[in-house]
Length: 521
Image 1 (spheres, rainbow, N blue to C red):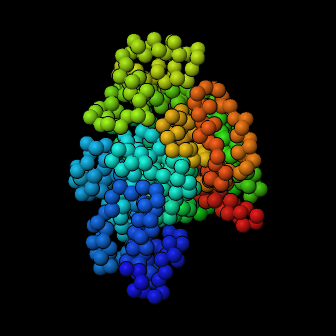
Image 2: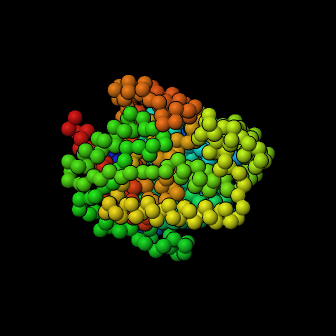
Image 3: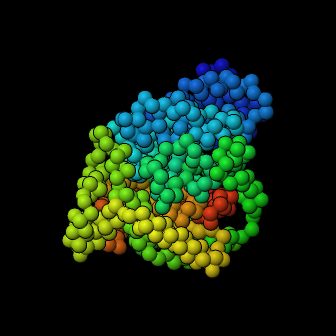
């Protein structure tokens, strides 16, 4: 298929960054089918290695033929894109890894997929997820385990793990996932790529299936994943168009702000090295310190930001908020399904009556305080308790914004969990979502940029890792970090709600400084 055009070489197509590739597709200097089949071929190779694809979208070939006949090409004309399992594509299942969802094809495309098609993009595959999406690993009984393309013994992250593996392995130039606790950011960080979790409502979630339906305490978002920041910006430019605003009137009609993204004004950047809940690995701490130094040397102002009460936020907002019904909704989704192994204890707790949870809480409190907090916050709440919780979360957001404004910050530099944990570890380490989950509770845009790789020194320093609680979770996390020399470690770049362009501008700044530094070495 790729040999008919002597000037086209598959390797050179795959090495083109998205802005360049889309330009060549639009001006006709690269034939659509060459690009399409180059990516189909590479995706097949990565799928064989990592088990990241759940379905090939056969109609993509029809769309490819039709694309050549259309008039004015959109911003993503002819670009093959990959889509997470839980994002509806007409005629295809959105399984969430549940057997009961097989052979229940979506009646129509989600709004994001509709807009992508109108911009000329060609969705060509759907990708793997963990069962229920409430996990940052990537395994289910239908499609099995997805592996990290950088090291097969490692998790690709989740729940957008199939996307992370496919984009990280070079089998897709632009992928789409969702994030309710880090589900875009974990796979990006673990697989060494970039991702943007926008403010929850900046992009339409219509036609996207959530793990827990109707849950409002912790904001979910849909967003892009790619090898570089410029690709994410191009994607947001394409999506934030009239089509998006007309197809979903609940999305604010805010087109992409070019002025903010291309500004070169020095930034005032808040930063912290730890949240005092999940002790950062030595490589995570170094990633923040080195990035801070590079930003200061480039003329930006770095201001320490003090995080407080992260443990309260995790237990009282995240666990209580997501499972305010005592996890009844989640238990229902698992009804009749087989795989529950990684969530065994969780299910047992969810099914326990409130009186038993109270007894367990008091027994566990002196010995395993974090576990006792989980037990306490997994009971069924009354309606007034849920309203009170939502009010408390609102107050927390305003307090956080006040602290941000007092320091006069533009953006924030934050740690990102890494390096990639071994397969099976994320299921045992649900508490380690603290760095990412915070920005779902706050509903701030947050992006991930890889900045360094684990060194021998980091590995040596890890021997002294104890954690803040010195409990079973801390000991398990220390084990999960081990043996990671050469694996990527990222940072999070965060902005205030609706400031995706500023978030991307900051991500671009970090990426550029890291590239410059690496060229000098």
